[in-house]
Structures are given as C-alpha cells and as structure tokens.
Length: 244
Image 1 (cartoon, helix red, strand yellow):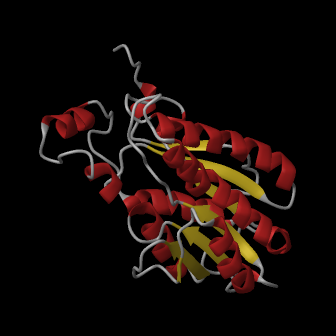
Image 2 (tube, one colour):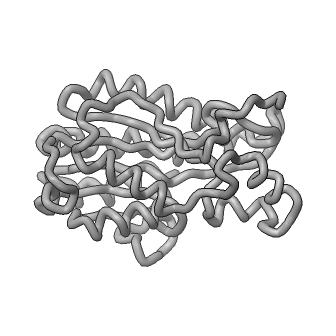
Image 3 (cartoon, one colour):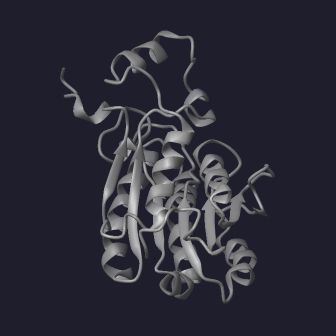
C-alpha cells in the first residue's frame, strides 16, 4: 500500500461492494468507481450501481456467480454494506429470520473474503465491514440486527489477525444515516425523528456520502497502519450516556 492519492493508486484494481441497490452501499460503489476502481456492485435487486444481482443469503449462488468474476484479479478492497434488518424482540424472531440475518450480514462477507483472499494479498488490500452503532449499544425490538453487528465486529478483530500483515480489516459503524433503511421504520416528520436529531450532538442525521468518503479513505492505502478497528461515524451518538 502507498500514500499516493486515491485516484492515482488504483491501477484499475477490483473493488467488491455489497448492498449497492441504495443507501451506503450505492454511495460507496459510486465513490470508488469515480476514483478509478473497477467495481463489482452486488445486491438482490437491479440498480444503477449493481453489476451482479444476487441474494447474499443464497451462499451457493453467491459463490457460483462471484468466483469467475474474481479469478486471477487483484482485489483492492471488499466493502460489505449489505444488511438484513429484522425487527423483533428477543425470543420472538423466527429461526428462519435469525439464520437469514447471519447469512446476509456476516457469513456472505466471510465467503467473499475466502474467494478473494489471494487477490487481496497481491494488492495489499483491505476489507471494510459496514457495522452499526447497534453493535455497541442498541434499542428494543432489534435483537437480531444488533446481534449480527456485534458478531461482525468480533469477526473484524479475528480476521485482522488471520489476514494480516498483507490484508487489513476494519469496520465502519454508522449511526443514523439518511437511508431508506432508516426511514422505513421512522417517520421523518414525526416526534421520534425529531428526538433522534435532538439527541445527536451534531444536530442532524448523517449522509451516505460522508460514510462513503470514510470508506474511500480506508480503501486508499492511507490507512495502512489501521486494522482490527471499529470506526464510528455517528454524529457523537455513542458519546452520550444512555441514562442522561
């Protein structure tokens, strides 16, 4: 890895981004493509930034479709943004939803790393897992999602040891970001949204571009001494005591 500017250091290396149908994944794919990388965008539905349409919960289909696309390629980065967010209190979520959440949120990432490990080594590449503040502190009725994000952060620490020194591994943990996932369960004009903003020290929700810019820094090679880390981008949300 070098300290060269992002666009100058790519040499058309491959970057794989999951969850590119919208939100953070789409912003990451667009930003990295603009920087000169050859981006494979993976999502379940067709979208502008999606080049490989696949349900990440179908691990056999993911392996069969991705393997020929990455064979022999230098892989600069994997950015795993895809996530299944199942709502439900502890003890109420179906076994099927639990298993699907782990397949999409964590196991698919491990599979992609396995398929690209040699290419990542050749490129001195990096893995960026998009976690969440829910991996550290959470709220009610989101037990499955919180559990997968906590597990993802544990995976990041273990993978940093397993894949180093050639490959670095970090997680980015966003707080409230202006995405379809946030507003799917929250009225943007309602009191809960107003309370969320009021309790965020910077006084607003974040943007997908702000997360994508942080991811681009991690991919650029300027973060070569960072691995095994969980980097928060939450507007200061986790700086506040929950009892305050």
